[in-house]
Each structure stands twice: as C-alpha cells, then as structure tokens.
Length: 387
Length: 130
Ligand SMILES: [Zn+2]
Image (cartoon, rainbow over all chains, first blue to last red; front, side, top):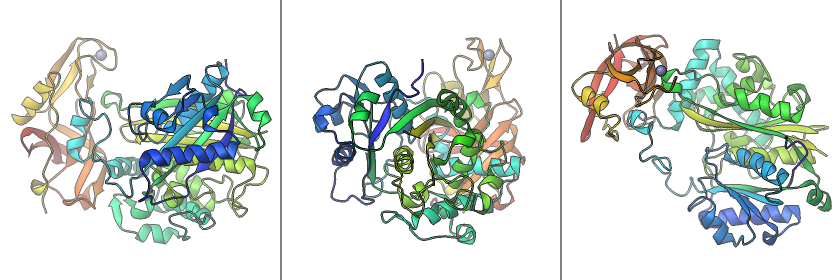
C-alpha cells in the first residue's frame, strides 16, 4: 500500500494578513478555507474530510466544522503535533482518500499570536508527565532551540555565521514578497549584531510572530483532473516523533531522520530529484539540523551546506522557503507547517514570484518540525510532483 | 542579579513523582533505576521506558554531572541558563545552571547539584559549576 499518486493538492491559500486585529480565530480558519476552495474551484459543500490541529478552537475538529457548516463530513482528524501538523494532515488526508474514506479534504491552520496574548502554557499541559520537569526551569521555545544550537556548534563546529546564512537566504526571498513581515535583505553581520535572545540565537535567528493562517484542499485523482488549476500530485508522506528517551538524550537529530527516508522511499525519488524545499524555519538552527536529517548533506555538515547563499533561489544548489519563510514572511499561529506546503505548491505550479521561481520545478519537498526540538517534536515530510 | 531573585513556579506533583520532589526538598536528587535492564532514567516513571519493566526503584544520585548543552535566555526579567546536564548515573536532565558567570559556561563543564526553593512547592534540583 502506498499513497503515491493517490491524491492531489488542488487548492492552496495563504491569508494575506499578518496582523488580524479585526478578525476572530474561527473567522480566519473559515477565510483560509474559503480562499483554498476558491483557488481549487470548489465550495464548502464539497468538503467531506476535515483536518485541523490545536490552533483550531474547540474540541478537535468539531467546533470549526460546526462554525463553517461542514455538514457532509465523513472523515476527520485533529492530530496535534505543533507546527508540523498540517504536513501530517496532508499525508493523512491522502491516506483517507486512497482508502475511499473521503474525497475532498480541507486542512486549515490559523491563529493570532501577534494581537492576542501568547498562551503561557501549551494546550493539554495539565497532568502532562514531562511539564513538571521542564516548565519550572523556564523551558520556553527560544532556549529549547538554543540548546540544540549550542550542542550542534559543540559537536560539529557549526558557527553562528553559518546559522546566519539561513536568515540571509530567507531575507533575499522575502524582499520579493509584498506580504512579508520582514522584507528587508539582511547580511550575516546584521544577524550577528542583532540583540541576543537565547544564546547562541539572536533576534534575527528567530522566526516572526504573525497573525494569519492558510488552508489546502486535497482530493482524489479523478476530481483533480476535472479542476482547472495545475495539478500537484502527492508522491510520498511520512511522520516521526523525536523523543527525549528517558534521558538518553541526543538533540542534534530531529524526526526528519526517520520521516525523510520513509517519504523518499514512498515517493520513489532521491534528494537529487528535489528542485525546491520548504523547511520549517522556526529558528535558523532548525533548518540546518533538518537538512542534515533529510540527507541533503551529511550529519554535521549542515552549517557548511547552508553557507554562502546555497539556499538562495537562482544562486545556490537548494532553493528553500522562497516566500521568505517563517524567518521573514509569515508564521501564523506560531506554526510553520501550512505556509511550507503552500509555497511548495506555488513553486510546483510555477506561481512563485518570478524573482524566486525555481526553473523546471517538478518535484518539491516540505518538512515540518513541530513542538520543542530539544525535548519532543513531531516531524513530517511531504514530497510532491507537478503533473 | 542572582537566580535567587527568580520566582520559580512549583512543579505539579503526582503520586508517581512525589518521592522525587520530597527528596529534592530534603536536598537529595533521585533517579529511577531499572533492576531488569540496569539503566537509570529521568524524568522518573513507574515503568522503565527502555525495557518496560515494572522493577524500577529510586536511587540517590551523586549529584555530579556535566553540562550537555545550555542556552541563556537574555530577554527574561532575570536572565537564566536553561541546560541539559548529564548525570554521573547516566540520564541527561533538563535543569538550570545557577550561581555562576554564564559567559564562562561551556559544554562539558563539570557541575554539582544545588536545590532552589519554588513558590509554594517542592525545591528544584539545579546545578552549579563543581
Ligand atoms: Zn529497564
């Protein structure tokens, strides 16, 4: 059994807002759904599968399905693994479609971390077994990623300059995105001279905090062929947790180490076939570790790999996050997975900004690392092909 | 500024973890050791997460370890060093490095346990350069 060729992404929409003072979170989810449906040439009444994660208010998918009026649902899934959840959801939607459990699946993500106070605790943190051993120590997002950067520098000699190149590449792309929160091109020196946040990470090593969201529509081949938009075929998808292992800790790997090879095997392609990657860039170090784990370079060589503009479209060997990514464009709901899928779809459709469009972009990969990289993350890899 | 000025939140104590927190308040660091596979783990569970054995028992740790990694949160009201410390007994635990110059911290720095009070809760095991 495989999902290769069994499902297509036919609609994708990134909400233009980055600051949504005048919208509720449910409204953002619905506006994203509407945008993706309009993109696909479908309507709310066509949806029979719905996927959302913890950013959707309410009990699993129920409140949002009720709010939007999704009366024909026969399949739903609210797998919660932070920012990688939408990538997991597209994989699960493809599985459900391949099994005939639904025909037209909607995936939404939205949130307002910029204009509403950030929650101080994770959802479901009460009675969570690990929180008492981490929360009181101040294990909030930035230093948890800082731990990985410190260790990666220690084990492999990765430098802060190399990490900064990830941000530099993202900023080169963001300058062409009229919606990007940070459209200004920055230099390695700018990153190194930005204020320290959680050592060794500075402010420009961290992604933006933005309101907004996105949605995608996944459907079966017969329906995809009946629609007018360019077809993006799902070749392979896989997910993997990365755990703390009872204190047998190794924080320079992510779930991509396991989800990557499984997704490549299902897609029947190799790293050499990938023309464009969307990599969840919560922090610059996240991209370095993820690219290593996905096999684009050897473990420990990620710093060298991303340096000198190697991730810049038209300049380097592996163009990434051509929308500017979470580092410069958008990080709605503090979850980067959805925007990663959307920019990969733009690239495969040939609809990225002309200045960053990858030539002959026929196969692309999107990867999300959700949760907290030094403790527990959910990794998800998705490989897609233009048909 | 010293870490003593940081207000530390109390951890949620459960029936499963009460011995750990009681010991911490008395100035002792416990780890759970498995009598089947011989490995120690952290955070403590009733069953061994390595071999699933129920034959786990509390073991008093030496309190000695080395810094596995660290990150100083400069933006906090009182900056602090989040860290993973690898204990002499094997497990690596999340903690804070305290009462030292953060600029001198390095991966591999030998450290020893100290205990810091929380607001209305048990003490938290933390570490300081040995
Ligand atoms: Zn055991």
